[in-house]
Length: 151
Image (cartoon, rainbow, N blue to C red):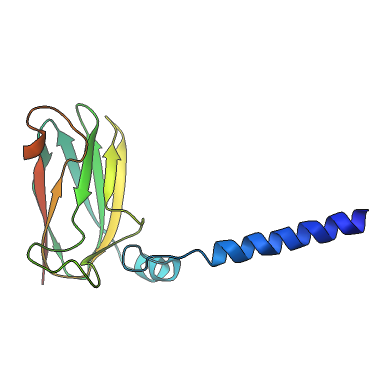
């Protein structure tokens, strides 16, 4: 009985490990663990950003191409959101995006008075629009900013 149970547990563990390893990953959207370790060697440029009714401060963020960036974002007055385009303005939205995030997403919820850290590598120069993605009142549509990646 113990031998059968042990064998069954071993087989289930192998099956689970295989199914987790075979899960598809989207390499264009997220930094892999290997890339993250390599990027981790570089010092991240830390930029503090605040979100409050209808504005981000700073509203325009400038970074260098190839830079590893860590945005520390805090909503001051209520819950907001931040959605950053993966492709620069005017670029075709196919192929490799210009921003590679450590998390496989480009949209974050910003809870009031809680810091949200958003990390990415700026791989392609251009202007990347960002906007609030959580309705915050009548001026919500105007709550926008820009991330500018420069040579």
